[in-house]
Image (cartoon, rainbow, N blue to C red; front, side, top):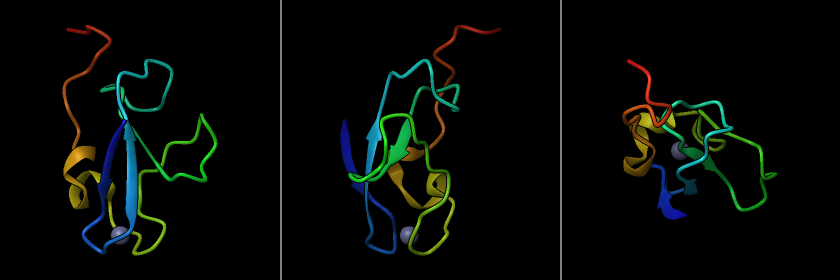
Length: 67
Ligand SMILES: [Zn+2]
């Protein structure tokens, strides 16, 4: 689990290596109060795209081995 934050200052947690989440790179940006299966794509505070506003949430290579 990576503790990070949005550019607006909102804390964001990034769980990595999850193969059952929406993102093919296995990253699950969420908040401490989020459920274990919840993936956030946008910041709940500023509505910014977390992949752009949060370094740790940047899209990485797929962990599913496609291609
Ligand atoms: Zn934000």
